[in-house]
Amino acid sequence: MAQTAQITPFPTEPENEAQRVLQLQRQAHFDNPYPDYEERLDNLLKLEQILVDNQDAIAQAIRTDFGNRAIEESKLLEIFLSIDGIRYARKRLRKWMKPRRRGVSIWFAGAGNRLLPQPKGVVGVVVPWNYPLFLAIGPLTSALAAGNRCMVKMAANSRNLCELLDRLVAEQFDESTLSILPGVRGSDFTTLPFDHVIFTGSADTGRTVMRAAAENLTPVTLELGGKSPTIIADDFDVELAASRILFTKFMNAGQTCVAPDYLFLPESKKEQFVEAARRIMAKRYPDLDNGQFTSIIDDASYGRLSDTLAEAQGSGAEVINLCPGHAAQASSRLMPPHLVMEPGDDTTLMREEIFGPLLPVRGYSDIDQVLDYINRRDRPLGLYLFSNDKTLQDKVIRSTLSGGVSINDCSFQVAQHDMPFGGIGASGMGHYHGHEGFVEFSKLRPIFTQFRFSALPLLHPPYGRVFNTLYRLMIRLKL
Image 1 (cartoon, rainbow, N blue to C red):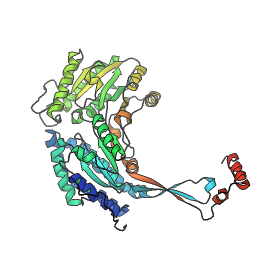
Image 2: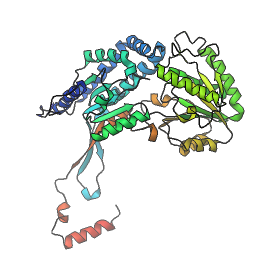
Image 3: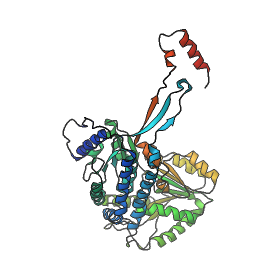
């Protein structure tokens, strides 16, 4: 344990709760800048136990915040994946913490190089409402494993979950290590001089967060979403593709940053896909009033989606309600899943991220036209291809750029703990999960140790014949 540092992070009294907690955590970091393995492991175990012991309460809080969301969906997509990610990190933490040896040039023979992963300090985590548990616990797992202290700001639409987590976390953690901040304003949080900020949300808000972070030279990780394209190739079974696409598209009523946003498939197979979609959705959601289909998060989002659908229909696109016995219900914010056939490029549906249960479908005859369409737009968070043709898989991957790729399924690249998750360009920057998350929230500090008998004095001034001879030798040798 390091000796107490006689430093305070703020010279004046904090003006609000967020500043107070940051001051507390900053001082705790100064007092103990390198938590040992046992302390980090204990933090991960406590975080895991909170989730294991409170699964029903957490799922119910999420359901209440949404108005309706299946308990089973929250348990599978948020609680299980969060617990699984913590367990993955726990098992590998000791290895991740070890210093890494690096090579030394022949000109420094006898010296040594190593990288020591050290905690950055205090990490601010800004959490969206759509997967409020998973998108809080994922960054926390990485940041706590790396030895940091963490402050969490949750979305206003996650009030019930935020209050629950605040209570549960306070029972297990000192606020100098981990603190949930109910009611804190975004401007009070993102303008703080954190040592790292991770934000998940819209691109517009991401720009605001990045501008605020720039004032403090705070490094940022941004997860921003975007319009993730999905392609069914001619060689792939349409029924199987439809089954997988519709599951990932309509879970959480499409309010998923890695959801397939629009679909390209061969012209000749459009009708086959529509018929398959009708059969599949009739089986999965025979009754939208039974609590199995998620509500749209709030009235503003419901209104936006209703307007988007009406605009597409008004422009001539065919709109297909995949649960035809159910109409949209403004009072409960339930919107049935829809296919929208051949919407125009100028429609909101094709210009903006949908974040709802609407799936645009377009036919193609030439895969190169599809790739050109994708490449002329912002780089997406995910790209999904259904094909067993290895040559085509390689072509699509190498001809495009996205945050991640899933072959023959959608969205589940985010659930792979041994791979990094993150966007590129308009879909974000930086990445976390697994070892890459540990690295993201660490300073890989390079440490050079000089050999006892260094030859460098031969190159010291005054310069003359010895220096020139050695310099010519250094240039000529190709080592």
